[in-house]
Image 1 (spheres, rainbow, N blue to C red):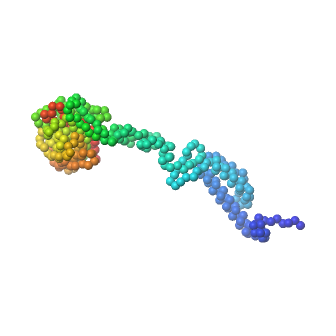
Image 2: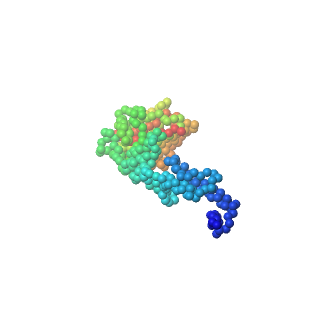
Image 3: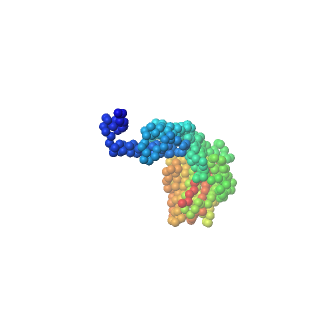
Length: 376
């Protein structure tokens, strides 16, 4: 008599008689496991993007007893599809997945490596968002500063303070034998001469230097500092703040009859305040009834040591009619010089730069490097 066939289960159980219920449970479990692994593998293929169809050699249906040979053949086909779809290399914590070259291999790269490969590795480069994507701005010339191009423009490098190099500013027509202004190179950001209006120009001159200071020079030589030569513009609004940075030149040594600085004026009554360097030893505020008539010395603050360049600021609040003047040596730390809720000028309508000089045969100079306005 032929020997009866042994079931796989009975072999596993050392020839124990088969249990029909146990065999059905194991077959169902095998089918469920095969379908789960198969579905997971398919999900991997699908999640990688439909690059190419993956053909399986065997079709399995629900309720069918899975054949191990067919299942393994399907798994082999899936494995080949996954390998063809690409590979992910080993990496360390914090690295990014990156396609180092064209192909299908992803490698672990540091953020520095990714940025270097994408936009460049030049030291001092600046990453910014251009109109077409993220790009790199190459390092600028030493001493230049980064200037915003606004919401519709790109940033750029412009001449600036940098390492604080010394530059010499000389007004047009000034004799080289006279005193010359030397100041740390400032940020040049100021209005063009064409946007300013002369007030009592007389024989005064102004030079608009490209990428440099706006130089105002006066040759008024009266017995007192009763004449102002000024360049002005309308205030920015009802409430406003204006800040300037400038240097003085050709000041008459030992004289307190020269003044260089910020002019605040009312066109309704022609009255004026001037806040600025009174020579080089003090910040003074003088009032004028007109551009050719000095009125009084309002306030003064001694500067030690003496400076030939300075920052000056005026601020006006219309609700309280308060006008306040400040000065600074570095543009960061500000000291109040004078404030009043009853300005001699009334509500100012203009501001700008001015020079007043007496008995100065070489002509006093104001070199404007910076002017900023704001109106909240």
